[in-house]
Length: 111
Picture 1 (spheres, helix red, strand yellow):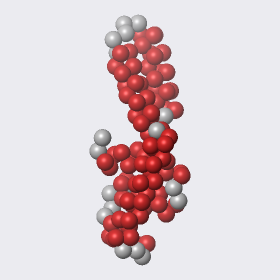
Picture 2 (picture 1 turned 120 degrees about the horizontal axis):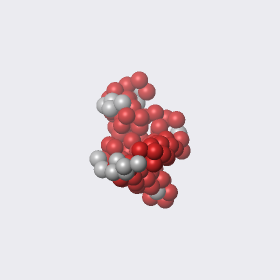
Picture 3 (picture 1 turned 90 degrees about the horizontal axis):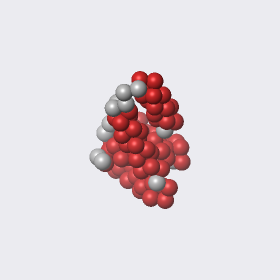
Picture 4 (picture 1 turned 45 degrees about the horizontal axis):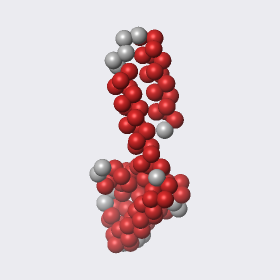
């Protein structure tokens, strides 16, 4: 998995456990794709300060994932639902296919 995608997923799972400042800087960097200078200027901090904050917050997110494993489990569940969806395409009974597809969509919505 690409490093950027990994941190977006971790931010999605554990972002509420971060401070508002940590979360907003991470979102600007990983989700909005702003540069260190673009993030630092409005906050009145240097590029290096932004980089240090990002590295510390990455370590925090990795630590949460190491201990809790939610992001990994979510990804595995998405893969399972994808596999089920592909298998449902081979079902000839349209009523059964629709029921299974509807349940898969409900499950994906809960993720």
